[in-house]
Image (cartoon, rainbow, N blue to C red):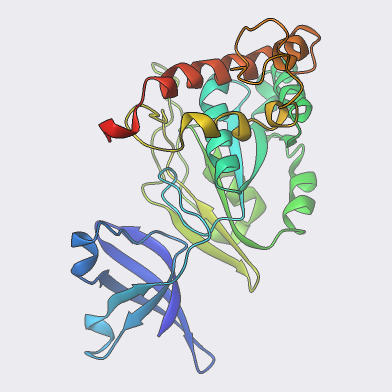
Length: 300
């Protein structure tokens, strides 16, 4: 049987299969050879399930071709990711947002920025929206508390197809937003610790939820970092291509080997000075450059 992995916890996967017009959720493990081959099934994978020994002994025998795969959130075949942050409580971390956006760009996944809890700091929410709109991204400011902005993002989602996900730091209100958008899901939500301003991890695993025949939406666990030193998200030469506003200016610099950090005659540096590129975005680019330039392929 063929199907789509909709959940995976501790090596046990739930695969949504359709056979003869009947929907089945089959619990199964991956075949043993996957581990030796370094293959890990991911939520969103289209797979072939071997049920020759009965559904209770079902095994994922084959992972069909992926169009993309992410380390965090651990998913495959994504079309669009809503990158969520809060205007306050917890404070927005634009550097981590920029890391995630760059990873999505590298994997040809559309990033969409969502700034939640705008009722807590309206000015900051609008500032962040401007940063990402200037970079060429769709950005939404909203409040699950007041309902502001919910209809706008609902209309946007109605135009989408494929596998979508909501990702971001713990405590920014991802599950709360999904409950607003899709009330029948009844997802668990948590509060933010007063001491640490971090969210309590109410979402423990990636779960891909069917919204319609053409749309699946994933709730993902919150995270606090994206470690470019430990994980190989992409190489240094890919970095300028993963920042949309830098990529579109490549070739405009005075020197062909410009690193776009601080060189005289750099089109990107000049655009930052003119306010065409947000300073925070350029700072994120430079920080990632410093990390990636010290990574060597022969060390892997």
